Amino acid sequence: MKTRFALIVLGLVIFPTAVLSLLAGLALTEWESVLQRRLQITAAHAIQEASSQIRARLEDNLEHLRLAAAEALSRGGNLADLDMVAVRLHNHHPLIEQIYVYMTPVGIIYPTSSPPGNRRSAPGKSPVSMTEERLAQRIQQALAQRPSLTDTISFVHEDRLYWFTYLRNRQGLYAGFRVSPEAFDRLLTQTLALLSAGGFILSAAGPTAGTEDIRISDSFSPVPPSSPSPTRPSSRRVPTGSSVLARGRLRDPLGFVEVTAFLDEADAPTHASPFPRRLYAWGILLATGCVVTGTILMVRSAASEIRRARERSDFVTSVSHDLRTPVASLKMLAESLHLGHVQDRGKQQQFLATLVRECDGLADTIERLLYFVRQDQGAATYARERLDPGVLVRSAVDTMAARLDLTVQRAEEQADAAPADAARGAIRLTLADPLPQVCGDWGALTRVLTNLLDNAAKYGRSAENPSAPLRIHVEAHPSCRRGRPGVAIVVEDHGIGIEKREVRLIFRRFYRGRASTLCRVSGAGLGLALCRDIVRAHGGRILASSQPGRGSRFTVWLPALRS
Image (cartoon, rainbow, N blue to C red; front, side, top):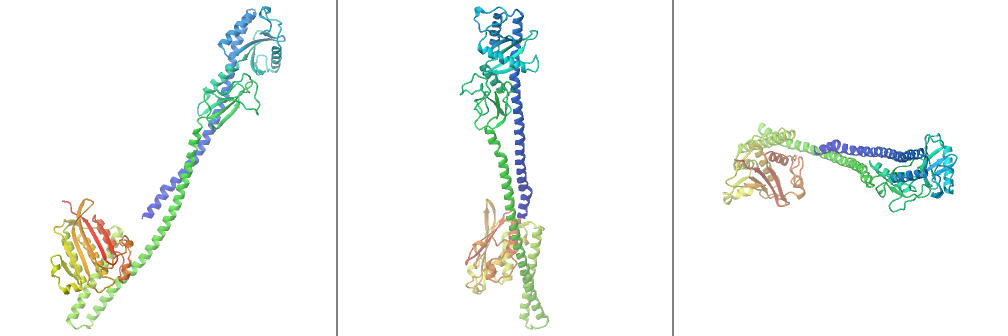
């Protein structure tokens, strides 16, 4: 039953748990992949959003410049007005480092390289420096490549970023500005900090993006792929060992800035990754444990079934012998009396007494078998009644003494025991007075005591001197077990005893110890098992202790009747 229950637990609880652990590990792994992919897509969108926001900010500054420049030119285009516009825009829009006004095909008309005293009051041809000349050529080249007249042009020239726009209603005039590297770096940092959320950190790498420990460059030249680029993590440092989710460059002309999305909290994957592995390990461990344990249980169950089959075979053989022997004796004695082979009146009485004794033994064997069947089927019932332990013990001792042809020596009679009685054997009875009453079935408890007395008679003679008189001691006295009052009934013999390793086995069904072989005692190995079941059903305990060669002691403890 225990093996079957264990197999049920393995099959319905532990093995499904192992399978669920493996499936959960697989699901977590797949879910991590889905989350990783989703995070990568979100990070890529954030990089595109960063590019769009920075371009929008630059174009917004360009729009302010266009309006201010158009207003100054509408008032006559005085260079002083343009100087005031440049100062005002630089103060309010830090991204504007220097403003420019370009006229086709003249070139750059603001700012001019001539001293302030030589400046003209209106736009016209002015001397320009070589730097402005090269810038004018670059503007002309950008204008030639623009798709339409109204498109904004932006480009990097000599490590500087420039943005220009067409001035409406001003034929051939363009206004633009040079971007401040420091202001651009701050804008980039703020934008990436705002977009760094949801599990990732955006970090910029390029000529204007540096950490606090790296000098910020003042150039906008594109960085070759092979050259190392300093990195600036928006407003937080990128933890060491962070994995890269996405990488991309800002839209031209900001392609010199490469933005990388790192996984936020580099320790998070380290903490999350072990969970699927732990589930896999737990599932494999449980599955392996189920297989190993199930195999062990099946082997033990098979061995137990083989042992039980052997025990049942031995039981059938023993019961057949126990039934055939008295039947043969009964038949022989009955035929002798029936055929008149015994004429002596005394012999006839002796034969009749033997017939009665053999019938009682046969009836007792049949009753044991029937009781065993009822107990095995759970159909055994007990009539509960108030019992006097002293009367119960005396009755069982007197019954067995008459059956075994032994004398009973009570405590007050032991000193006056006759030599003849001592020679054939005796049961010494010691009863405490008073004894607490118990509640139980008279017949069942009597069967327990008679079985113990019968075993004491079978195994109570010494192996060295089997002809010695049989001595059995029966005692009953009050006893407490775990604080509960009760009665202890002791049956003790002085025979061959029981080996220490067999003391716990003798209460198993069909078990027969080595003593049964030495003493050539037949039986089915059910007596002590039935005693244990009956005593347990009455709420008591039966214990055995023995010393090989010195005898055995069986103690039956029954709880006292509660008042």
